[in-house]
Length: 531
Image 1 (cartoon, helix red, strand yellow):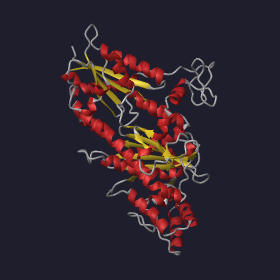
Image 2 (spheres, one colour):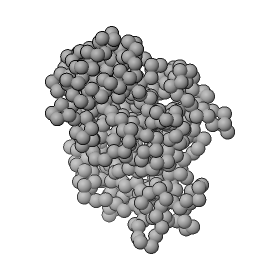
Image 3 (spheres, one colour):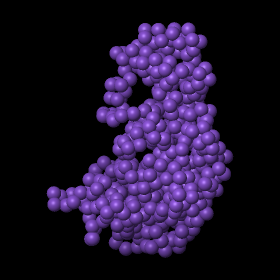
Image 4 (tube, one colour):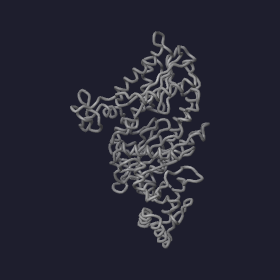
């Protein structure tokens, strides 16, 4: 008989659950619920809690402090050292939770693991309808071997591909449709929001589980009041209050950042203790990177406001200003935030650099990450914007080996089709391309670096290129190489020179590509105050 039973937890379609609404408040509430699936720290100085912790304490009387020993002493396996424990957390990270259960006495040795799954999924159905869990259970020795862990992950993949649980009530022709989703209005009496609109239990759970005071002041234990320069700011709960100006600068950006080759890194860690140490390191790096990103913003925000690049929304009832960035997801190596579009590239670069270097640890050089920046109008469907950011991040990853890349798209009107179709339709002239993106955030022997792009933006501004000449250049680039040559000659007659970028110089094009269209698009979304 197996000494232990391993239980691996995962959840599918988390992105559509979190970003499925155009209401930022609902998305923040969904993010809060997702944090609680496994664990959530309401305050950096308090013990972590969450549905996993709740069920383990309810069923097996495991105390919260003991359940967190996997973080404090990753080399220690409680079920191996003490007979008093029935369950412990293997690790939580990368969107998964691995739990260890002692074999039960009786006819079914896997009873402890099954009891947990039964109670945990019941709690999800009630508290977080719409979450789709995936679970694998497998017997193991104490401690589990490398082969047993591999078998468990293979079983989870099989379960995710073969079974989709029903976690919401089906819609019928006789049921009222939710005002914000395609789900049925349910509940007795039917659920309604503060505006008197009928809503599904999925939306109601997101709204009801949002602790407003905490959501305004904190994110995963990071308190704005404790970051110098941000004491007068709170996080926003509306997309139209992120600092946008009316008219030309009424755009938001959804930024999605994901670590490179995290699956490989975890697979290379053969032992449970090594996986625990890696999960800890990734979580610490993401928290460090978020704190560094907010700190970098605090150092620039006064200049941005003074120069008119931002106009913070004022909450008179709280006597606070709304911060122009709202973090939504920070889970392992995944990070997603929404912000005023003019901050997106600066914040993405700061976050990636901080995540890659990390706090002082022995994993320097192990990590890299990529970012997708999707810029749309404030009123554009939020989930479509997120999907675009995710596709852009995937595009950046096609270039990544052990380095970090950034890709972006600016949608000033509606979009149809996928990313490749958009680019083929909008940025291709015959066999030539107006794009050189994505860009490498470090140095690269044969590709254009992000630093070179920023230097080119600064060149255009320092040389005081008039807006009409930049517009002329943009239109010439669209017409092709010969039109570009003529435009460049005209500009040079006024002592306006193109910045040299690698092999691209006064001709504007090389090998059927040009970086200058990328640069012109970026100029509107990289204020001078950020250089």
